[in-house]
Length: 88
Image (cartoon, rainbow, N blue to C red; front, side, top):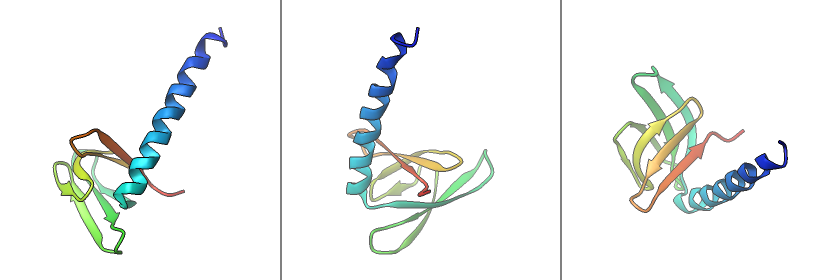
């Protein structure tokens, strides 16, 4: 059944490309995640080098914080969501 599953990766790849475009436009970089799983916080850096400490529901220049994971954050800007991942 490996032929059947070839549909998913291309869909995932397309989605990743799209979020990459949004990430570049938003000019925010995720530099850290801290806090507890129930009350997570994230550290973001703006293009100007300013550090923002955000939690769920906070607004950023790129949208509202809707999710904070172990190494990523999801922002909702009204026209869709943007996922920022920590640079490797």
